[in-house]
Amino acid sequence: MLMKACTPSSVLLVCLGNICRSPTAEEVFRQQAAIAGLSIKVDSAGTSDWHVGSAPDTRSQRHAKSHGYKINKLVARQVSANDFRDFDLILAMDSQNLADLQAIKDGIIESEDNLATLALFSEEDPTYCGSDVPDPYKCDNDDFEEVIERIESSAQAWIESWKAC
Ligand code: 4NP
Image 1 (cartoon, rainbow, N blue to C red):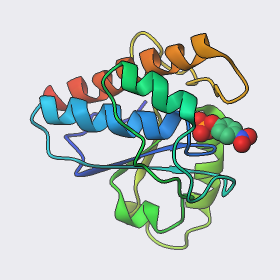
Image 2: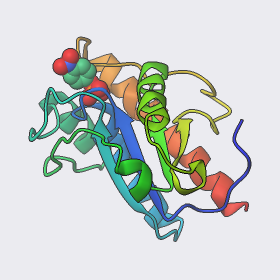
Image 3: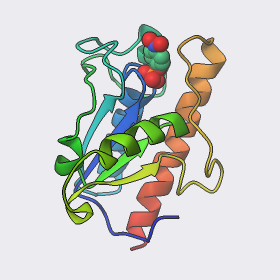
Image 4: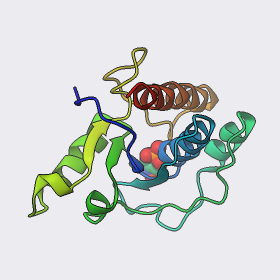
């Protein structure tokens, strides 16, 4: 469990491809933070380089839009060591993403104090705590809906935790 922390100035959401879960989470987080009156820089990235330069998956775009989140202009990029210097908090959509991010962080030769805190996206969420946002890429419509539901719930939980700080 993380130490309770006040609102970070920047948050990076990370999944595998940066075309389904994390771009959706980026826009959900951005909107929820704005509603809560929190000024936070929000971005997303993928651990892989498979879809760098691509727009979000059209299924994710469609499901996000139906919930009021416009993600069609986002462009996939790969996470880098510099993200650990540029962001306060990096949130992994699933435990494999978390392990891959931890390996990048472990490879950085400098003081831990200056690097982003790393956590699972569901970590603060009493409903989904400790569980993965499942990879929907090879799945059907219901799975894309579940992704949005989990993302909204877990993003709200982070924001509530900061409002309480
Ligand atoms: P994401 O989903 O990590 O939520 O963006 C995926 C997108 C693409 C692939 C896997 C997961 N892929 O295998 O190409």
